[in-house]
Image (cartoon, rainbow, N blue to C red; front, side, top):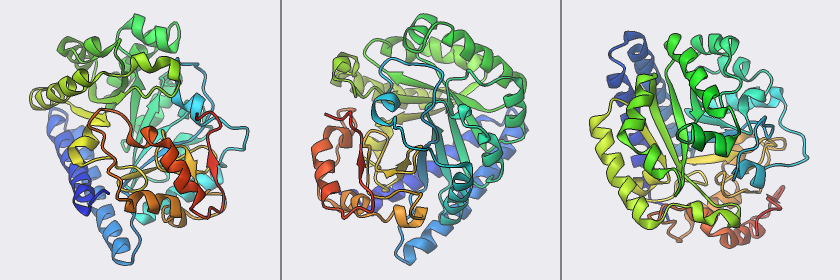
Length: 370
C-alpha cells in the first residue's frame, strides 16, 4: 500500500523538477521565465488539490491521456496497438474540452498526451491553448511537427513536445520505420530554431541500452537543443519480445547512471518506473496518476488497461473515485518495481479480480491480455 509519504514525495519531485528546469534554462531568460510561471501554476494547483483532499476527494497531480488510437507508424512492440485499440468511438473534442476544464478545476496540473500519434487528433493544439494552467507533455513521433505546428507551439510554452527516438538511425528506423530518425532530427532543428523547450522519449531495451545511455549520445542531443530525456523501460506486452526487457543488472546500472547524469548534465531526466522506485513504489491508480484512453475509460495506468468508469458517463471527479482505483490504492499489496518492471502489468490477474468486485458502471479490459 502506498503511503501518504509516497504521494507527498511525488508532489515534491514535481516542484524540484520545475525548479531545476528554471536553473538549467538561465542561459535563455525566456525559458527561465516560462519555467517559473509553470512552477507558480503548479503551486496554485497543489493548493486546489489540498482543498479537495480536505473534502474527501483525492486528486492525483498527473494524468496520462492517450488522446487517439490513430497512428501513421507501425512501431514494433507498440503497447498502444496491443492494449488499447478498439472499434469504439473516440471522445469528442467537445468532451475533451470539458475534460481539460474539469482537470484544471480539480488541480490536475500535468498531463502527458500520448496516442497513437496525438498530432493526428484534429484540433489538439487548439484544445491545449484553452488550458494554459496545465503543463502538457506532448509525446509525438515527430512526423507532424512541420513549420505550421511548430509556429503554434511557439505560442504555447505550456506544451512541451517529447520526440520518440530509439537511439541512432539504425535503431530508430528498425523500430519505427525507414526515415523515422531523419524525421526526428529535422523536427529538432525546427524546434531549436524557434527556441522551443523540447525533449526525447526512449524505450530502454536490452538492445539499445548501451547506446542511448552513453554520455556521447546525450551530449549530441543536448547540442541539438534537447533539454529533457524521458526513459521508459520496455514492457513486453507481446510475450515474443520478452528478450528485449532490461535484465536486473542493467536496471541497477541505470539507477547509478541516472544519479550521475543528474549531477553533471544540464538537462532533466524522467524515468519510468525508476523514478517511482525512488518514491516508494507504483504511483498508478490515482496515487500519483491515472490513465485515460481515447475512448474515455479511466484506467490505473497504460499498462493496466482495466476500467470501471468511462468519461462519457461520469465526470473526471467521479471517475477518479472509482471502486477499482480505490481498491488498488487501499490494497495492502506492495506494488514493488525495484526489478524495473511495471507492478500492475506483473499482477494482471489480481487487477482483473479487483475489477470483478468493483460494481462497475462499465467494465473494460483489453481483449489481447493473456
